[in-house]
Amino acid sequence: QVQLVESGGGLVQAGGSLRLSCAASGIRFSISTMGWYRQPPGKQRELVAAITSGGSTNYADSVKGRFTISRDNAKNTVYLQMSSLKPEDTAVYYCNAFITSFRLSYWGQGTQVTVSS
Image (cartoon, rainbow, N blue to C red; front, side):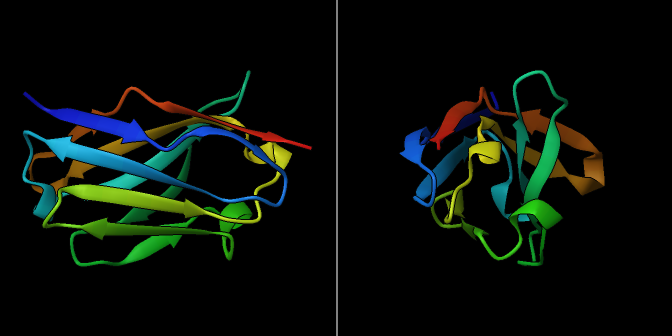
């Protein structure tokens, strides 16, 4: 059974920082591309950042220079370090695992991040 469990969300003031974690089980984590997506209120889900099995990363333009994605294959965990948070970063953040070779995609349940002005 595949499980992606996010943690680390919460309420923070603008300019603050949070670190999200996503612990994966039931998948071959080391070969998965891991991503963080977010869905602001009333808007569509969007990609925030992704990291491949080889460690290559890409970021949405809106978070470049402020957010950092990383992974620990020994712990089957992916992280999203968020700094200089803005009110527009407020959203439910979702963890995603994509196994390219099988074209399988899995989602976590989401964690709320609220940035107050």
